[in-house]
Amino acid sequence: MRYLRYMKTLSISLLLIITCSFAKAQLAGTKWTGTMLVPEATSVSFDFKKDTLNLIINDSGEIVETMTYTVKDDIITIKKLEGHSPCDEGSLAVLKYAIKNDLLTVTVVSDACDDRKGAWPTEPMKKE
Image 1: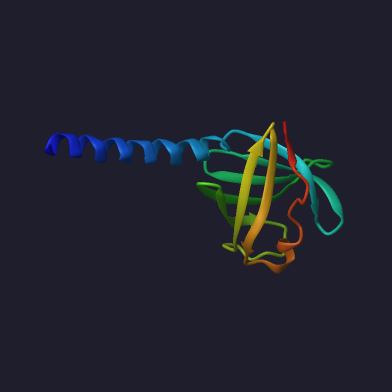
Image 2 (image 1 turned 30 degrees about the vertical axis):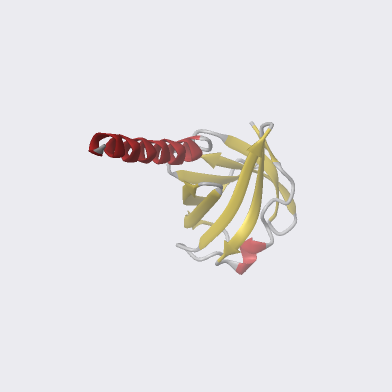
């Protein structure tokens, strides 16, 4: 009995670890193109690295912001490291996300930077 309980607990723990890793792996190493209001409609890319996210202006190739990110379930939490936006370094944003048919949809849950709150893409972003 004890052995079965131990194996069940171990199996559940491994499943949770794999699920969390898969969620972050779903974004790491991907790049998505869409439109942000910065302040006018501008074509941008979200370039997800292992632990960082670069926001790039597509016309110039300029990295506007570099952020760290974490993923849990369908939530991305980002923290500004550096960049040209008026947001304070360290400012956090929490986004709900979904990926379907190579389209990334983000919805703002909260954003500590008022200037960034209304800038997030409202239309799905396309995978590059």
